[in-house]
Length: 281
Image 1 (cartoon, helix red, strand yellow):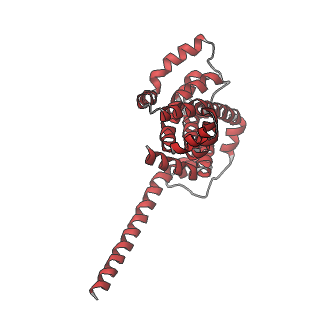
Image 2 (cartoon, one colour):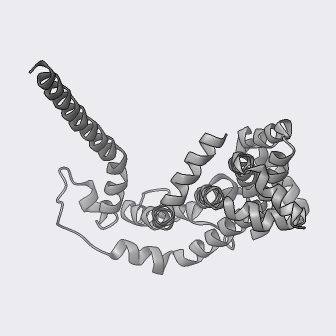
Image 3 (tube, one colour):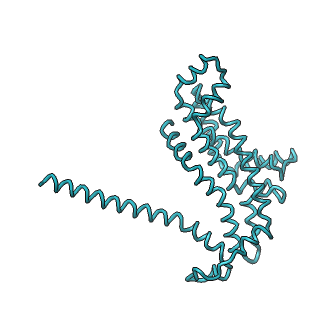
């Protein structure tokens, strides 16, 4: 009887702890999702309805804010610019960063890895003025090249930092077997190492793309009308006398949506990548 009583007590405590766990998770989800859900909700309201407290939840809903975003503000052009810059910086960061991370891991160059990572620690604003002067001398201001290169200053070290532990975790026997079979170092890297590192590559790509997509500081200084990206384009809804809150919320929702969809679609790889990188590192 004493054993059964102890077992029931254990089960009761476990159920209570499970209930508290899910309550805590629910509270955290509400805390983190509330601002996002409020932003989406306000994007369907006119400025008068947004200012009402308490809000009229189902009254005054409209799509006019989104029409203004795409018709009056021509946000499709800004989205295209952001896709070009974010995609370009991510692609070139991978092209340079993957071989660099593989070399660092293969030859155990920890000091070099820390030097590259230190570039990630430098505040971006410290690089802004030198970059502006350099790009101005080369007449690259308001070009995609200037934005891609500036975003790579953060994206490239990030790729190396994430991929280094992945490459270290690949069994050396696999690479030695490929060498015995006559494969060159390049062939081994392309056909053996990279396929085994897909979760890490996806993780590095997503995080690098997200940084570039959300970057405001480099774009506001190095871009003007031709290459302006979506974070800077939000300023179109802010004037000296007023703020178009409905349009601002709609634009913010449009900016967030592509990255959100990308994260949801690739979350399985991102979780595997972050977990494997943490374990191997």
